[in-house]
Length: 311
Image (cartoon, rainbow, N blue to C red; front, top):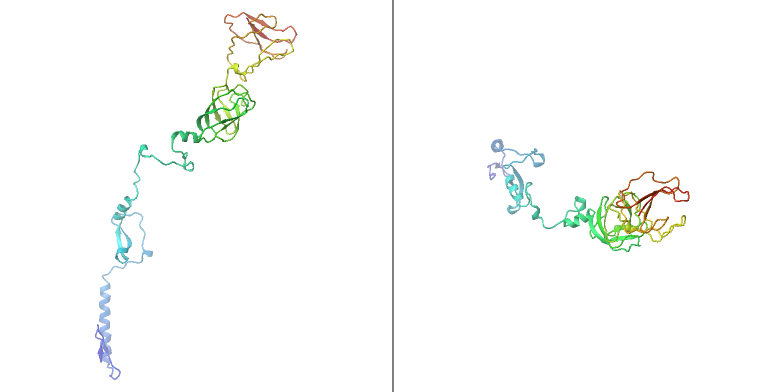
């Protein structure tokens, strides 16, 4: 007969007679041990697995997060939320953190994020369709070009261009920074500009309407649109100059002009107000400023021209 190590339960040998009292004693010993174990467990607090744990919407500094400690055999340990916040603050700035504009010395904001993709205010303005350039295209060449680095063509773009030569070409186009040749329209007539609307040395201002470049300040100096030797044969007028302003001026000033026709003496200026019996200006006002004013209603041929002559 032998006994177990921990609870001294009786273990009969092969040749021993088994007594009922031995079996009952073993049963009593086991019952006693299990009862003590059960009583001891009653003081323990059971926690369900994390997968079955409840949720919490706000974290307090005293709350803990479960981690495995790699420095201690990956044992399960608890880390306070306050310690986690302290560690994160060393890596990320607070929401209230700000920088002064002078602190930002590099970097750009892309166009896709609402920026211009440029690092300077000047380049940013060009990217938005603003800038100033020069045009050295000969006057007779219709395709005018302007070099303006970083410029982007957008509807509403505004540029200033200084022209080295007066434009004498019909239906010219403007190509700024290789963004494409666009027709140039007069802002008053909403049609292609005419030769002379752009003068030599002139700084012209344009805005892009999505289709054409619109000239905002066409030249109003008639001297840049002067003809030479225009000699209509109808009434035998001698050398004449025809000027097409392309707009309605409030004042025309002419000086140094000699006209010898219609029987007037030299140094006479004649202004025709209309042409033909059905086309004329019926009313006008004028200040002679020392000139002698001659008003005529016919040129002697029955055509019914209205004109004034100044001498």
